[in-house]
Length: 120
Image (cartoon, rainbow, N blue to C red; front, side):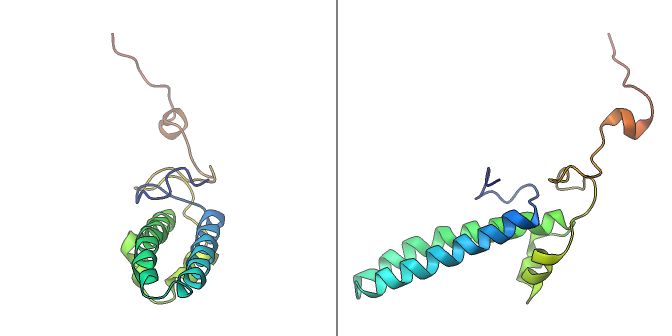
């Protein structure tokens, strides 16, 4: 879990997506409270904190969209985040990678029905 948090490639499960969102909210609100006490200088610090946080959140959202078999752009649809949080993933591998749960993943021997031939 959280192996490539800032990458937009691959698939993640609902648990990792939900935890990512909770981490985002915790850091955002705690940094907001801390920076509100700093005054004008805090706005620059807040910007430095918010940009990586948004990158993290969008990357995790894109991977969750991939797990459902959709493009990462789907996360921009209003309330689609709730669908990503509660909707099940596609079984087996899809164009974005193997299922992170391992359900439906098959190797080439099972998929073709015969072992691979090795060329000399």
